[in-house]
Amino acid sequence: MAKLIIQSIFAALKKFNMFSEKANTIFQDVIKTYKVLNTVDQSFTNKYDKDEDLIAHLLYRKCWIDTVQWAYEDIIRDPNIDPPAALKLKRMIDASNQDRTDTVEFIDSYFLDKYKDVDVKSDAKINSESPAWAIDRLSILALKIYHMHLETVREDASDAHKAACQKKLDVLLEQRVDLSTAIDDLLKDIANGDKYMKVYKQMKMYNDDELNPVLRGQK
Image 1 (cartoon, one colour):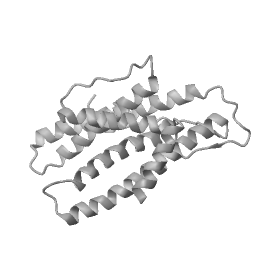
Image 2 (tube, one colour):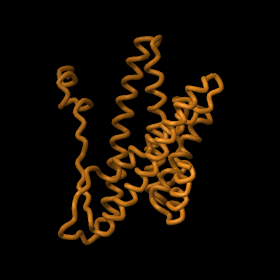
Image 3 (cartoon, rainbow, N blue to C red):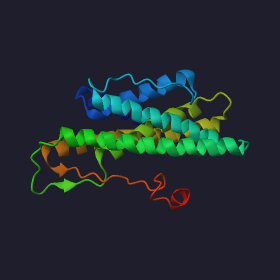
């Protein structure tokens, strides 16, 4: 019953061409494309031209970063990993996190430009997070759903394990519907002037030679 409700809600989102439907479709395509080779060493090709569809270009890149980093996080948890290899991978994860943050901020810049001419109402309110950071969670949620689904069909897993993972998957699917709806509502409110965007840069300090005292001491 729950699955039928979720499917009907997604059908409604698609019918009205909501932003979240586009984002979820792109995220699923990214994961499917990555899994063909299923290696962190594969080259990246964006299916969307930034001059033709900038937001699709950014969404595709964002989810690709998340998908590769998901694999990084699995690999580095190998208890038998060689320490030098682990250190190298940690540096790659740091770089990936910075790339992820930069891409999220590019997505917010897209929305700031898109809604720059909106007549904001005098009683408009600010949201607790920007559209891009909510989209960031939606991208990661797509990966959780993909991998949890795999656990429900694993041939070497017990029935109890599959059943437990199916319950978790049902919750994740419901969460995707709720988050998708919230994102669409937020963008609608911004477009109508009921809410306004105010973006704060993340200002990561640990990658900055001047702000990280350890890195500064190496200069």
